[in-house]
Length: 409
Ligand SMILES: [Zn+2]
Image (cartoon, rainbow, N blue to C red; front, side, top):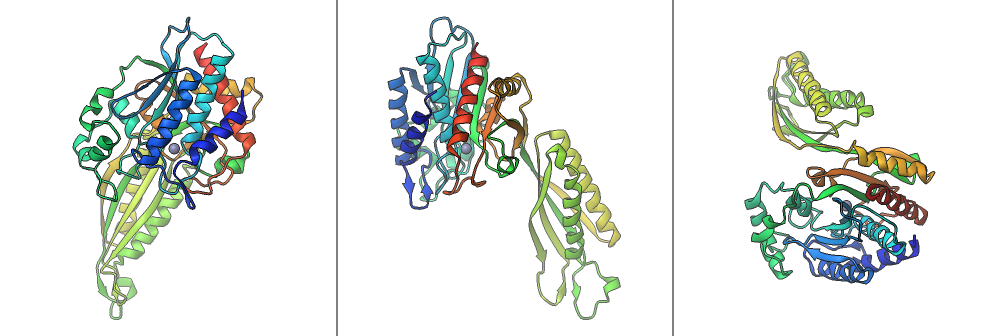
């Protein structure tokens, strides 16, 4: 496998949209179109069958004679956040293309066609919706009107941006994929946490993609004069909230092993005046995990604890569910094949989960899905300092190649 080709092409494409503060290649922007045109040329040079769907998702099929089964898909995205890193998305696209290129050049016999998928508009940065391309493919586009009305920071609507790029927004529903098209899908992606760096493993099998459940807690205490109200008579909403913040932390610590976490990220108090005991506190809790049951269980404990703490102060609290997204478990034969491939290559690996969303979670609705993470040497992502060691890029690419060979056998 030609890893120099991978380094070169990552460098070439990451120059498109490069600024002094990182890469800015927003979906449907001029730089995005330039990068897509460059990628299409690479695909043509390799000799794959190229097509696009009505949203601009790109596909490159390799179907040699004998490969008559369902398709094995692989890929990621090339749009970025403003001032993003070089590798988020692009690493997976180029590693996938390199693997297919090598299988084609070596004429390795496969019984399933291989297809590179480059998902359009994975990042929510421009229009406020994430993984748009894969949502359309999976038939998960539920808020058509919201999408139709979404505009970017410059007042350009998604409808206009698509039109300028040569696509018709009102045709996007034509790009839903028939359910049995893919046998499996694998996405390789840079780890967006510090976990793999701390564990010092070049690659990881991703066991699931976490999704958030969001809750609003309103604590009704009693506003009172800070000078004339004795401590024992107070129903201080902030004090109650503070106990709850610590309870959220302590309850979540017990769920560490089961990959569930909870955060109080926003807390408002009223009236928020220096000489008034806070009467009301409104806090927002973000609970995440890869298993719906575990998330619900942790939420149940937090709910019970909120009422208990409020009661102790003779106050009350209201709990409101804001949103609940479905996490995605990736424990299937694809993950098993990734793991088996690590063992065949005698490559050190670990299991991890993704705290961030990926196109793979939508693909999981229409086929069996797996993900490979590659160690992030900087520990940061969505940032210009995002970095991967060359040897880790190489390990990731070798693992994806081996996995695709095994899946397409
Ligand atoms: Zn990404």
